[in-house]
Length: 228
Image: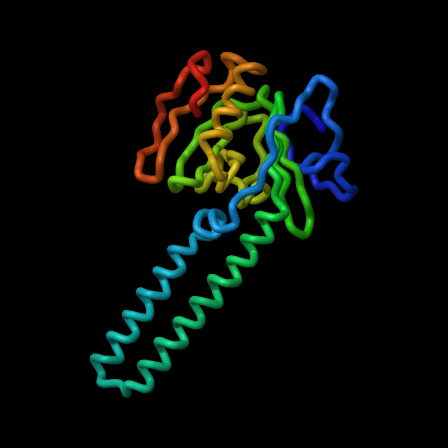
């Protein structure tokens, strides 16, 4: 695999699980894992927003029907149709999220991060520490979190090539993201230690944030204790 950050379509079988080629002798596999399907549903597919949309639109329609004295049977029919449609939409997104989570494999080695994703056409995204500028952990819930990787300009790939494993709304400066990680703190510490060992002083390890926090520009110097 090239040392540059890139997006690579691979057709042949994987010589190593989650990797398009065997690791060099001077590179060590540190960790592999998959994203949470539930985390992808509520993170990448914004299931909460979809449910809220159905609730608000149904409430608005029923309120209007009540104001014009619509028949109870008609109101019940509207409510039932909305509920069933919402369940169908959430179910479809749940199936897609499950398929994406099973197809994705995150890999951390002693020199880079690799994301394999894609259900129909597997792709590999290679993010070497030498092309990485910063890494930041964001906690989504007590048990799930994301790690966003900011790459140098020459090492970026299009947002749509990364999605759903891209930091939201970073369209002009796409950032690959290890999304919906279980035990994110443990994985963040492992990544921080690998970065410290391979690229000390190069990659900035930013303070962990939560959804309630505002984005933080201040960063922890990479010479400090590993704490993404």
